[in-house]
Amino acid sequence: MYSIGTLARRTGTKVQTIRYYEQIGLMPEAGRTAGGQRRYDEAALDRLAFIRHGRQLGFGLDAIRELLALNDQPGQSCSTSDSIARRQLAQVQQRLARLRALETELQRMIDSCDGHRGSDCRVLEVLRDHAECLTDHGSEAPVQS
Image (tube, rainbow, N blue to C red; front, side):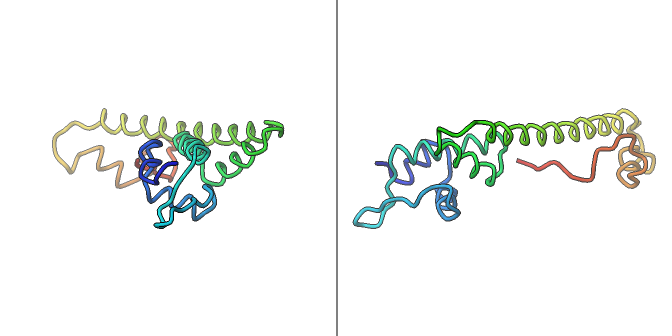
């Protein structure tokens, strides 16, 4: 049996995140000692590792919930999990396309800056007027991690 701290260390997950996963039903409620401390078994460790890896691959909590349900029913066809993974891949590809457009635009801005006065700065000019951009890099800023 594992304490919540041990479970956190073994999976690289914060204690608060484990509690949150319990609250929203991704993790089953932990058993408790007579003193009220949470105790987790090997199945809970495996489940949390599954969730953590899914999050690292960018799956949202709803997708992970679906994948966990499929994982809990090994006799099911894997077509649903394949579909979920394909949706995730499409989202990653869209983000990559936006990032490539951002890279192109930033490189163009930098390349056209002569480094002299701020009033003639191409970087500042493009930032002031989106119409100066040559690429459609979208209105959505990438999420900082």
